[in-house]
Image 1 (cartoon, rainbow, N blue to C red):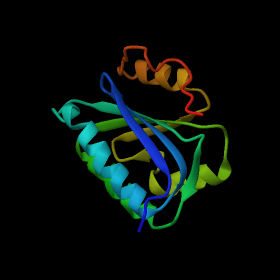
Image 2: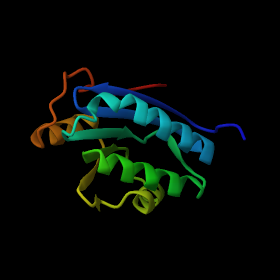
Image 3: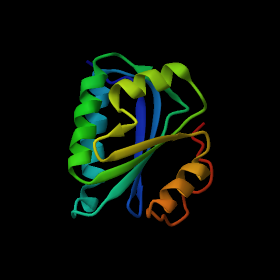
Length: 142
């Protein structure tokens, strides 16, 4: 089956940033998980790292993505991911599906939602995850 939806992944210091777009199927979730693991491999040195995920342009996913994402988050937690900042305007339906896949406090992972990425990066800085600042301005992909 062909992938539906898109994503971009980049790193800034010990923070992995992801931009998610469109409606996802299982194939997209699997490809995302594989590419994310490759992108964060330099961070797998036993030290903590964080993630920022941009969800404004994400249009949810089929139920089959949920176990793939849960398994991926378990892998990340086991490899020292400790903080996740979700960035999106308030959306009850997005919050519902994200909560099904990633509880607010998932073991040692603390997850928070922000409307602006400036707030997300400020929170991460307070938690000890300083970035170079290249991502401190609102990201737009339209």
